[in-house]
Length: 262
Image (cartoon, rainbow, N blue to C red):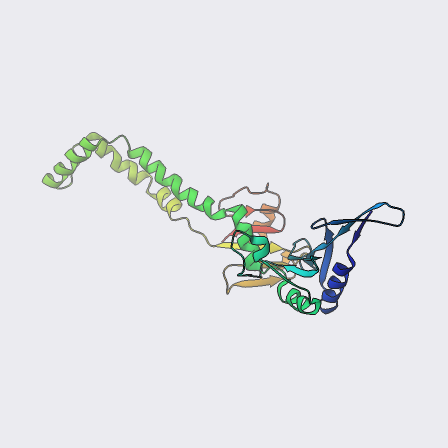
């Protein structure tokens, strides 16, 4: 049999009374064992993961009761008593006073901002690496095409060009000039390919938040309310396998987080 420690329930109920949008899910962390009247083993859970109704699928922190103290863990807490490597304790506060810990919980158990969701998503999606790869591929193509010219040929021709006014004598160098000209448009297109990237977060209720920078966040009631060009690219990404980069369109991490190229 499994149950939740009463102090944890009391703690959560006091928090929820102040913020009804917070939801608690008991987890098997810092468990303890006891026995009922019939000597059956009872697993007592002493912690809850906390989510928010606005973003129900995202855990925003944890509350618990153990060692006769109430505990709150959140990404927003910085406990300087502990080093960076001890992340669990560095992001936690605790006290025997439940009233004080309710206040700390309300201050720190808040939903992720659109910027936080975007930053966490980009660690997985790495769309900027895809854009960089296009330019790197173009660099490598140029290096490969021109790699047949030896140092001796370069030196000899450079001297010759200097002496006679930049007329190529060496055949390899002469052939390199039209090659470079033929690839100029492709070079300009790929090497200078730096479109703006719009992060799109689609919530469970269908509403949409877009992020193009700290001062360029927009809210929409649904996908249909987005500009037509952006909505069209989202439609393409929705039927595209996850993490597939499409030039001039973007990349989808999942059905909630998308990166649209503008």
